[in-house]
Length: 396
Image (cartoon, rainbow, N blue to C red; front, side, top):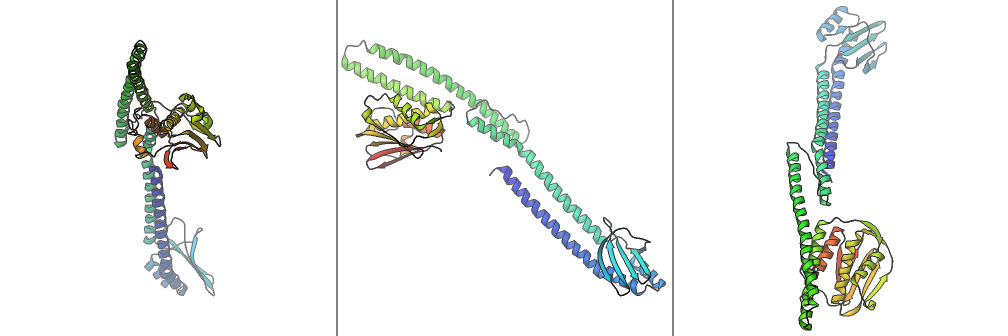
């Protein structure tokens, strides 16, 4: 879950709690007002009703409770109304006012009063305003935090671009806070890494050129040697050196190159891999393409990976054929042979191989592992019925 979603959830929770508390307090205050009406103004209205014919007593009641007589009333919200045999008592309140209206009607007599400001109403209004301000401040803080953290989205996107091999990606955020420092540190790191990788690329090209040239010259010079034994030894040395050089260069290129994803069939991948092996005896391989399906990946590098797996299967088989099978979006390579002495992860490291096998340098499975890692494809190994089985399951 992203940090922005977490903040949004926390804001919704805080906003909901604040709103519930505000409504709850407003409800309590409304009940207090209703109680005030019942206990105070209803009593005043009854006193006025009892003494409605006694003007002197009415004057005393007006002075005692600070009532102001008004000739007429505007539209008001009726809070309490009590019908009597010969009249009625009404208590109301005009909108946005802190005074109550008391109306007493008895026969032909009618008294309408406005009370003095009620402090409880004022307190309720102030409290409601404060709660509203709290909610408003909460919203402002939420929007400010979102604005403050919005560069994180840019940083995350730029880092993802850089991790995909876009080495010229930079963030360029110049704020003075921790986020700006983070962006600046990333840009400096990206500069250093880009320079380092470019230096390695140049070194890789130079090594490839400088090694391949003398190897080619050496292989040409071998042909002039008459001693057959020495000639074969030197051929083997130069051949091993060429294999090692090509393997190291291929492994290093995997750290630099970006994959070019395309859609192609599994049958195309298998056939391309077999073509790279130049197998003269076709009986060594048995194909079981039970269902052809399409996959998405870099055909060049996947071909190298599958070729290396088939090559290993051929080298370590005690009986033939090696079976290449496709089914359920998976590719399996099976050969009859003894179980690997160590866990498969051991052989995925460079320069590791079975002790009994002297040919090669242990780079094949390391290249396989790196290629499939860059495709996010797992390689599974099991030994069953005297068979070593490597299986790659492709994304559907």
